[in-house]
Length: 334
Image 1 (cartoon, rainbow, N blue to C red):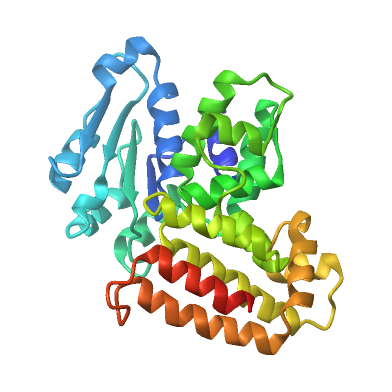
Image 2: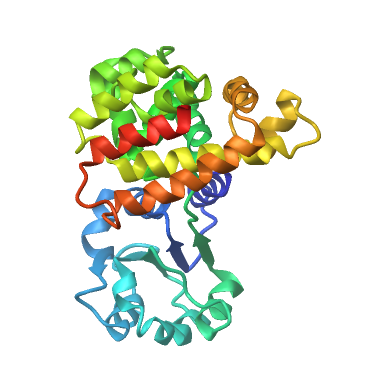
């Protein structure tokens, strides 16, 4: 995020580069940077003659170069934006000769989503000389809650740790989806308001009581009644609560517990740092570690591997996933 802020600040201050090659697995920042250039590089009067948007599936590298070499009309520069440029992955290296000697009055923006160019080849080496090569890396799940907090803070909002965790669990690491939901919330709640689990439940439709986050906590606390209530809810709503997701999250949780048991320093700060979890949730992990000795944790991990296979239809004899999930809870909690 800091790299994006610096890049945008440079553009605002007129520190422009001839090529912005935006690549990587996470499309959110690629779109943000490209949209900023599209909206702000030229005035509205200049855009008509000097801004062009191309799509990778419709053009060749030769078409892009031809457009980039044009001179601007009644303006200092022109902007050429190529969206979905990953569709040109087989021929993208042909851009190297233009990158070696780009048109100084053109700003060329390449949106190369979900992929990266080979850093050993000529194109990357040419781009690195005096252009911008931005790699948008996908965030790990444990980084997304902090990203949500940092995204909301400049806009005057805060978010409860549990509410952030609910969004991550429901929407995964797709920053565009998460941002869309956050923008909807900002339309209906006032600034200087904390986004709570209740607001998430009321406006996005994620249950604050019946979700994988609460199931994980109930299992860690060995709260049999709560865990079985949640599992029964999942069994009744399988489309919204696929077993494969639940098993994956529980596997991650117990793997972290196994790591926790191996730590010499179990102070809250050390645990948060080592497990890469929000300090707010450290006590949950410490409680779970007390309730599940290392031998039991290892046994649960083996059980989760077994049920992961079964949830994918291997060796389960068409047993409903709700029944499999109930059996899994019995195996974990007893």
